[in-house]
Image (cartoon, rainbow, N blue to C red; front, side, top):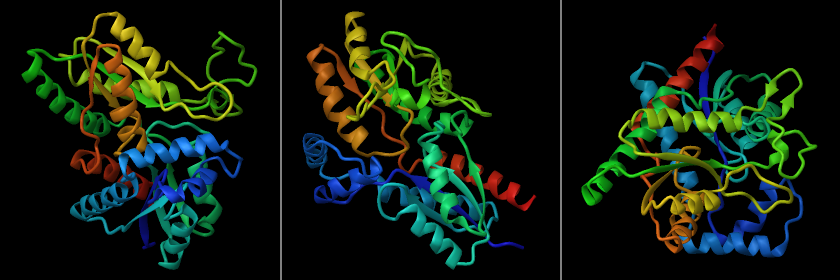
Length: 323
């Protein structure tokens, strides 16, 4: 029987502020960035101390491996990062050196955008050689993923209900992406021409999948009085990014008279700068100036339910490889 393994892919993050310039060059594929952008990112990292993304992802990998062992599946779990160490190419080479012949590959970004998740896939394929891979393209509608987010949101709603006497509204968010990556290149100001059509593949699914994940989470908490959806963390690169943005959505929510709000990012599986700075610092400050108290549920991080979700995906992928 072929030796099998699981490979989890994540964005990656530097360990120190001094590593930010090199890290950002990886993120933008070597394109030059204005110095003020680099300094702003360094400032954000300095405010949160560091990003725990890598260590949390490694812990998630250990939990997934433990779940697979409980299922009687002998498949070690490797973790590779696209923009920082351990880099995906290095990890794939390590797998081949370990005599792994088949690998179930899962990107820890559940909502599939062909330009972002596609970069992860190409990075694996470039080093795979004879290593046979099964790549999970997207898992935005996985029931256990929705349940993992719902567990965190339910705990936060219970906490807020104890304080306010009722469930509070929720703003769901996912990371924005450049408009040009999901919509046709001839997008004109004020006109939404719809999703980009990819030859032989149809429309890019990212925006729809992000909203669908949020819907599945909300369905598990029918007591939520009202909910919204926005895209967060628009980048500093040129050109428009998909919206609505969190800031404009918060402004509209405040105009409706909402005074207490939960914000749950459903596109991120662990704490990192887009949560620890963007949500916990920037969005909270923005909401406060509008007279809105903004809180968020705990991130999934080491959620056992998330581990079961990923282990289930891995089990299916390994099964397809054997078939």
